[in-house]
Length: 299
Image 1: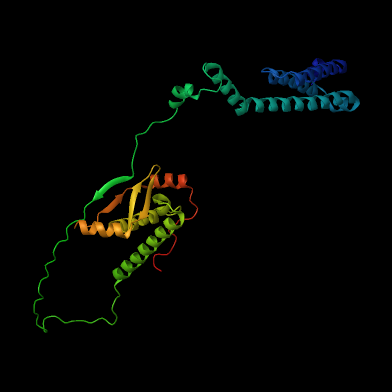
Image 2: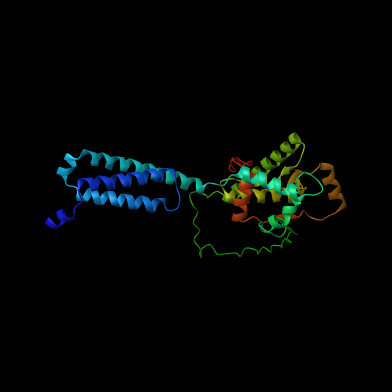
């Protein structure tokens, strides 16, 4: 304790150190560079050493040192705030308006023939940034219907009543398959009416994927594609590709009757492929909130 007191600085020396550190932090507020934080750290360490050497009785008697210390803390906080603002500006110094103006100016200078920017000059550099993929089509082709096999029914063998005891159930289980087939037929008829009304009111074919996509249910989208294939097979509607995408429209009655008279060929059912990833991409591209086919199949 005696050695610490012997090496301690006097009140005048402590005041001089505190004033020097305060003056240094005031200068740092005006000039911000890469060494600002290091210099601020040196000044704060100097003040901490002086504060450690000062006893409580000396702080009570020398209020000027306490005042300079508080001013030092205020100045240090302002330096840190200035450094934070400077760092934020450096991180977001990109200005899209300035970049676009410089880009247009560069193209005007390189375009010798006309004053308007020649955007084709950026073609070689820009096209390298895009991933090139091959052209693809969602139509995989058509399949001819399979031949129906003739079912050979065996005659029931006569049995002796005493050999097998026949048990008659109390209640008969209804035929579930017949009910499912009826619900599918009702759904297909509703979809046919939906396509006919849309094309008649809009005066143009209906986008195929806008019709079959369900934004929340991948299984419903696949089932809607199957329903459309039934209508195509029966010759009620037809699929075709326009300049943008695949569209569906109802077939005219006179065309269907002529085709039936000119050929005996059975209807061909269209097969289209759609996986989960393609469904997600199409859902984002069309931005559907509600499905067009939005009715219960069982009703």
